[in-house]
Image 1 (cartoon, rainbow, N blue to C red):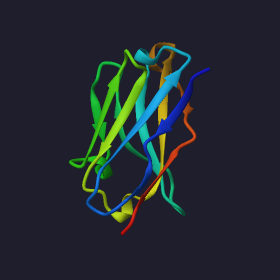
Image 2: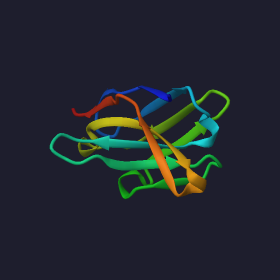
Image 3: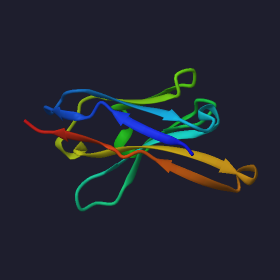
Length: 121
């Protein structure tokens, strides 16, 4: 069973920066595609960014230009550097680990509990 624990959320002023981290235990971290999702009140959860086991990154529109995802397989961690934060970035940010199965035909998702990010003056 994979367990994910996020950290680094908090209150930041508009234009500020935060770095979120997620540490994984259990499973084979280096084999998973890791991602950051967020969910704002009253909205559906949405992808922010993901990074494959080989380090290929993918950013949703909300994460482009301002956010950077990275991973350290030696430390079983994935991070999200967020810059130029806006009030609309306020959300609970969750770490995701995706384990592909059956030669990539199916997958299993693991989720962390999330960390609150609030952007407000």
